[in-house]
View: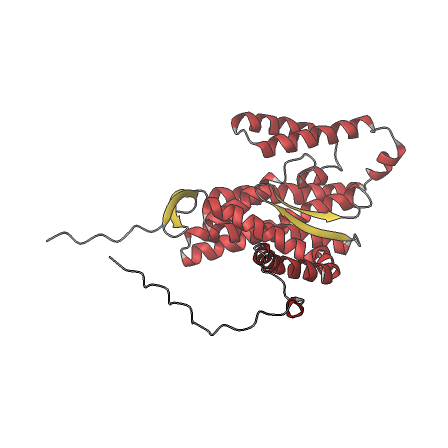
Length: 312
């Protein structure tokens, strides 16, 4: 139990003359609302300061968001976070890095052809895309632009696979298998995939076969990504068939036979190499990531675990 001390009695003063009315002219009584107003001003002060800073640095912030490097890095970080949520941050970072190498192949070829590049952007669970102000001047130039991504991406996949086998890293081999699959999928002969632009120098029958193959794949492995590619590819195929007799399209498709042979050789060789790489690195194995939690991925077999000593 606690006790409350009594309030001290007020100090007694000798009676004096009453204050003159003139002495009270500058006196203002205390109103209960004054404290609330002061509290409101104190609470609003940080927000006012932030608004002033935003207004002051508005131009700098707008310039920062317009930078291509900022947009590329920002979308990369978002993609890494999305993939890390499912497969762990190491796999997510490696997968996005391999996507970047694939897109850099397109960027290098675009620069070689003198095509202005607007930037590279990543979309979680959709991949990445290189945005340019224009395409190739003809179907052959567009074909090399499409093949450049899988060429550099496939080379990176083989390099990662080789390192993973050399050091015994299941994670690197899993990343290599995923890169083989990604680049091989992009060679399907249907726009907007890279294979669609690579086979644009040939008969439209290639695009029809690619469309039919994707429809079958969508029934076996339903995916919203496949549905989007099928929709865009069907529209592109219809547009090309509808404009097949236009002089502009015929001039665009006018490619020398030697160019057609070279493009066909690179396309078929690249598809075969990626298929072999994917088959060689395809083994079902469980590896640990994301702080020790196990999940299944397609990687090379790991060496057997050491035997545990028998309990005494």
